[in-house]
View 1 (cartoon, rainbow, N blue to C red):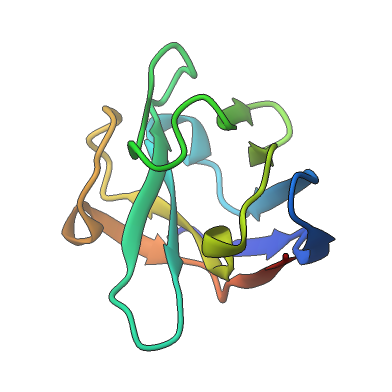
View 2: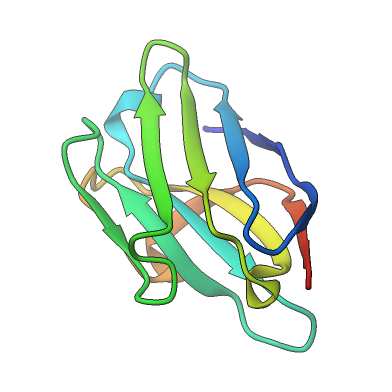
Length: 125
């Protein structure tokens, strides 16, 4: 069982930066691939980024490639999402997720068994 708590969201102007954190409980954190998803009002939840169990591989949605960076600290049981050059279209509720134990990067919500409550990111123009 993995419990996830996101933090770091807020209001930022376009072009600004935010760093999201996701703290995980449980002793199996290092065996899980981790992901970030987001959901804007009236839209479906969409994939943002995923990182494998070791942190050696990451994949990104085209919309954030080159602007966002996912990383993890397995000693601190934490995964991060550094968001730079933010745009108003990045406004959404951002969720952290842990996969069901594959360990490899996953881009679909169905591959994740554990979800946080979300942290709101609002980018003003």
